[in-house]
Amino acid sequence: MASRGKDTFGLILVGIGVIALVLLFILNLPFFAWLILALIVAAIFIIAALVIVGVLAIVPMYFLKHGPDSEQSANYKIEDVKPIKEDEKK
Image (cartoon, rainbow, N blue to C red; front, top):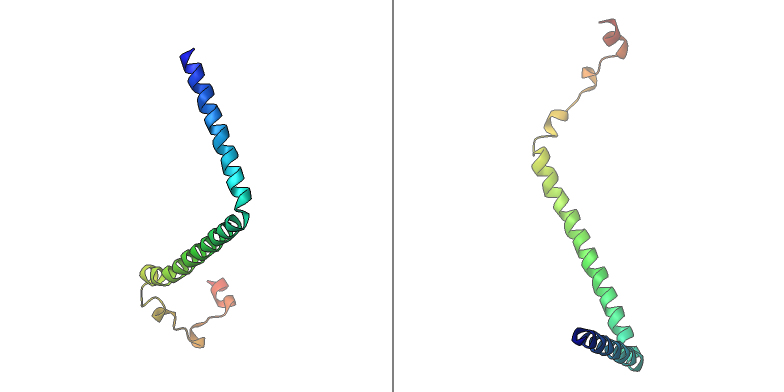
């Protein structure tokens, strides 16, 4: 029975805390509105910064993967191109 009393007392304290929090929110509504707006703006800036850093990190990763000389072998001349019909005859 003693634990049941503690549970009830704890539940009453939680209820009083929730009511106090709601009253605090209602009485300071402009402050909380600005606080929520500031948190949203901060989250947007953080997400934008992470996207920018991610995009900037792609460039070096591309060159690390492909290497600096990956485009040098792509020097094709028009004389190197053979007609498709010659390839079909073989």
